[in-house]
Length: 295
Ligand SMILES: [Zn+2]
Image 1 (cartoon, rainbow, N blue to C red):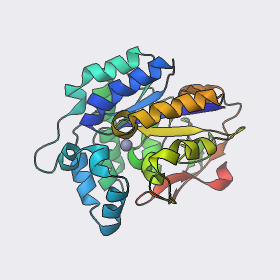
Image 2: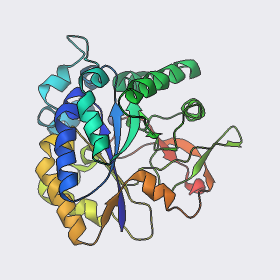
Image 3: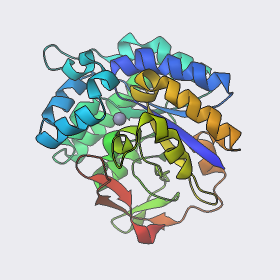
Image 4: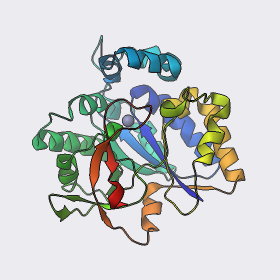
């Protein structure tokens, strides 16, 4: 089975430490993946504290967030302005492209997008995308994009059409489709994420680091889209050994890893579909989801 591997890079620390580590693991196994970079200010500390509600603290403890993200991330942007990732860490991004990975835009300001998407005007969405695309294009031109936290609206889908993205990966779902907005079928296909993320399942239903890889492998099924999102901050840093073991185990079971772009190229048809808001177990708030009838 082909597993399309997507690496989300949300923070300065993830870009600096997680990305090079993941590139080393992937090149060891000759795997090419799709990396989505955040290139503007790292205000993720602000984001994490904004979510400071009881259930959030429980999740922090369950997933050992301080160990997972590091205290510097938890505090970043709260006490001092966040550093601009695309200015300071050009080399890490350039090296990722040089390794043959596919490069896409995740965000200009990951925190601002997640916190304000519900109130952003179409113009503000366009500005955000333009700043991100321009900053990333100074290093390597992005060919695709993925909305932070799967926070994607009709305005986002429409605004993305102004940029030369071959495809986007903005929602959770089960098959590749072309989103319909206001009765119009858009040009840029969606490659949805089909598999859960680490922070969504660890600590739930008795899942531990020892059982995590087997659980994830059991979710990979034949004759369907398998798109996995890992995070530079998690699988690239604190879960690195576990992730390397996952790759080994998956390859031993006969799976192959590839980019989202290659999975799209191999798709026999890309039917129209709709994006709706839904909930994902283990994740806070709404996420964009492929409507079931659209699959
Ligand atoms: Zn992200």
